[in-house]
Length: 215
Image (cartoon, helix red, strand yellow):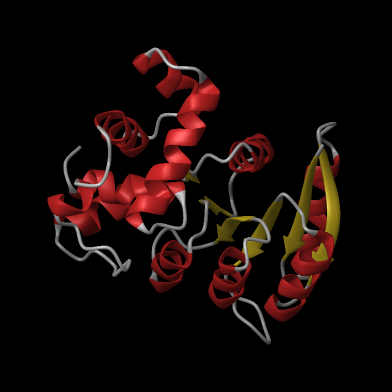
């Protein structure tokens, strides 16, 4: 069972999200928060698998809340936003969010995104991906704490570089396993190791780096 904490300040929207999530047999809503500070408090107490995080919230914004939750390794964060790209998305990317989904996404997309993040894989809405790539092509890459220098790959093994390249293509662990003829569990281990070596907080950040380096 995937336990989800819903952080959304608008009660009507929050109720809708809870209803959608509750309709899935494999997902349980562990708690609800109307502001970022409360979201962090509940994440510490409930230890959900995924936090569905709105970016614009009172008391503590979603980006700051995401940064705290990720830093304390309380849960993976799936950011829900009405914007396809702005400072919030870049901020959440730097904070280590595991995924980005637009609020107008269909119910099935929301459920699948939650499942994907719960598996330890990143997910980014297509509209967000297109804009991110456009920004990278224009050289407006948000600071991430890791320079886009090929030298950062020196500590990676050949296999880890191959896995990183696949992550950059947006492949899932199962798809990477099939392409590289590896066990899915081994892929997950490689991803965890390369994130640690590169000083990255999420699979999404790894995908961004892979694209920047042309892997």
